[in-house]
Amino acid sequence: MAFMVKHVVGGQLKNLTGGLGGEEKPEAEKTDAAAQGMTQEEFEQYQQQLEEEKQEREANFAQKKAERATIRSHFRDKYRLPKNEMDETQIQQAGDDVVLPTELAKMIAEDNQEETHKQSVLGQLSNIQNVDIDQLKDKAQATLEDLKKQTENCSLM
Image 1 (cartoon, one colour):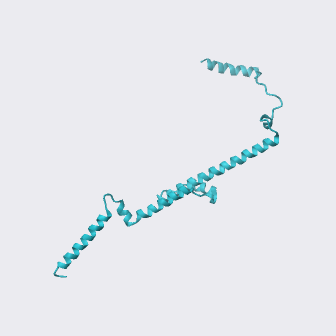
Image 2 (cartoon, one colour):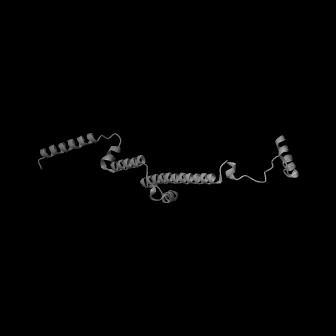
Image 3 (cartoon, helix red, strand yellow):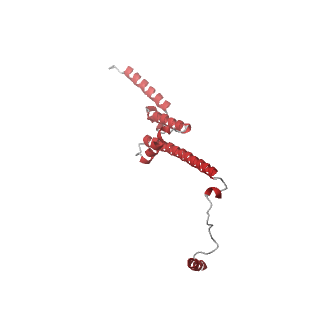
């Protein structure tokens, strides 16, 4: 409550006095360079250096964003998901400089190899649970041998 009274009365009191309190600004304000204790040339060089560092950080950031967008678009293609326009614009803004880190490129290559193996017939059979391919092969050969024996004993053939 006291805060509210002080805020309301204090603001109006300051308006009446015109702000003639202890906060007076000097007539000749110091420049930014003088305020930091530098000459004008040093200050300009400092500002230029800051600007270059800022541009370098922004370029690195854009590169990282483009790399991430490339990875996302790769997985969207892989899993047949709808494309995202924002990712494509980020890749275009970075230009042809988008290079995936080697570790990620290796991971993607391994994923592609696994994908091709899974799409093969043996890969599909190995995905079925509780199936032993060697056992299936042995059963198939045994069945074939049984059929041959039965056909040998057949009088019609």
